[in-house]
Image 1: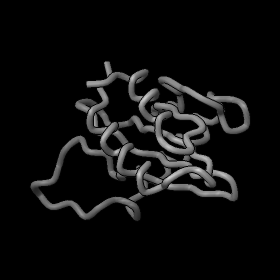
Image 2: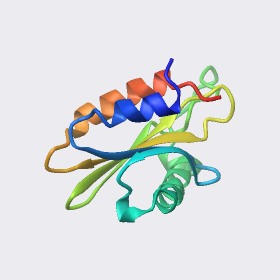
Image 3: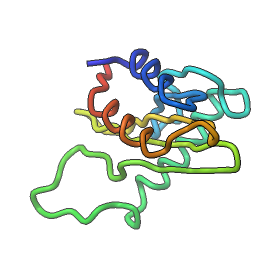
Image 4: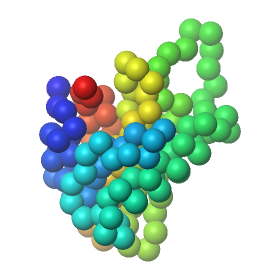
Length: 132
């Protein structure tokens, strides 16, 4: 079961990876970072990504339909993808035993990155990530 540092190192092995972070979306704080930060500042990037994550997580339009047997601590959203001319940003929500307010943020060079592979691997990493 990898911790934050191991998870970030694994994320940087993905093709086109420029940087990654583990972020608490309720506070906007980066719990760990690696690589280059968009705009040069990991803390600003974490705070801005947390705003996006909070928007998706707190609005019912993005939440799945829940039946009576589906209550729990799962995040309301699996992931968010934002693309621009140069990069892909993938925010993958992490299910935790407490409040599920953490996500993995990976940014990839668009020319070298594989968005489908990144989504699959981030999902796997999120499932194994141990916070504590």
